Amino acid sequence: MALQDLTPQLRTRLNRMERAVGWFVLVAAVLLLAGFGYYLRNTAQRKGWFKTRVPYYTMVDRATGLRVGDPVMLMGFEVGQITKVDALPPDYFDYNIYVEFEIMEPNYGYIWTDGSKTKIESDLFGKRVLEVTKGTGGYSTYDFHPLEEHTIADLEKLPDTDKWTLAMNAYDSTGTNVIVPVLSPLNKDVIGKLRQSGLVKLPVFNTREMRKKPTAVWHDKEGAYVKFIPKPDKNANLYWLPANESMAVSERAEKLIGQVEQALPGILDLTNKITAVLGNSATLASNLNIVALSAQPAASNFALLAAQLRGPGAFGEWALGTNGQKDLEATLANVNQTVANTDTNLNELFENLALSLDNLAGITSNLNAQVQSNTNMLGSISQAVVDTDDLVQGLKRHWLLRSAFKKKPDTKTTQPTVSPKQGGR
Figure (spheres, rainbow, N blue to C red):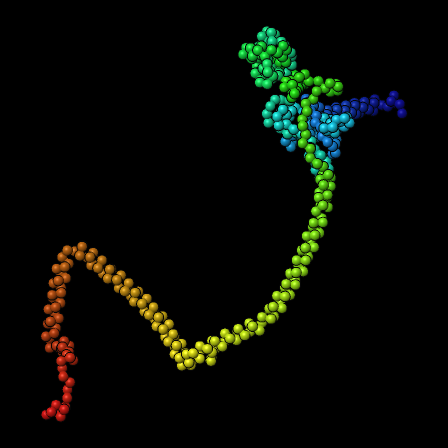
């Protein structure tokens, strides 16, 4: 049906629907582009697409487990990736494999001329990882300041000479002693020493500027920074990090198996000797069993002899006699009982004596306290004693109590009573 055949109301509704669909498609496209841009941005940050990358290289014996794109580790972090793995020329006999890798900013700041090396570590599955160690001193491997060459005469004409640093180690005329170390500011004293060295042109850094890409690389043999030429130029000069390469797991396993094969005859010989020792031990145990069986009658005789010595009718009883042995046993039992009783009585005596001393000490202490507190007590006690004595004497003379105080006759002087016939009357 043609659009002209629709009523005005339907045409209006259709136009509104078309505009809504158009806005929906436009918003979806914008969201899609925004999501794609966000993904690209995160990927670029993760991959370091917009970060400065500094190239290095090393040389190893084997390329086993090393692939282009593998990560480069530093202190446990992923700081770059391997960019090239290639074989060296056949006439190069020191190493076999050339490995080139990049380190992203700011991690290349940990790489110094002293202490920085590469380590090739392998895992259980034969995969090898390239790891770079942190530097301990020396100089930075790359520099980002503009590198220029000037004569001694031109150095004094430079503006802000303190902002310029020497890019090499300047030696004396003998070529052995450093008179001006690298990265020294170009002040008047330094320029004077450089004039005495006899050098014509010197590489210097303009520290007033900082470039995004590296401008100079340290050259170990020359002891100076030289202009950095990046890849893919054939004269590219990258910084070399020596490698400490460990053996692959498969090679270690083969070496271990070889050592086991070499040691296996000795192990078999040792097991044979152990078997012989065990056989001798079994023979010795059987011989000891025979000796033990042979010694059983002697042990029985010794037990019988001991029983004869201590039993009834034994040698002790024969020597002392039946009554003597019984008397001796009874005497020993009495002595033991006497010692036990004596010990018990002495303990009771000492305990009673200690108790009496404690009581006496308490009485004397109380008496002392009473005397101390009452000075007239001694006179009162003396008078009470006299009065008590008079009372007792009076009681002795009283007719009712006189018989209770009669004196007992002296048994030593009184003669026994005898009959008149016995007395001679």
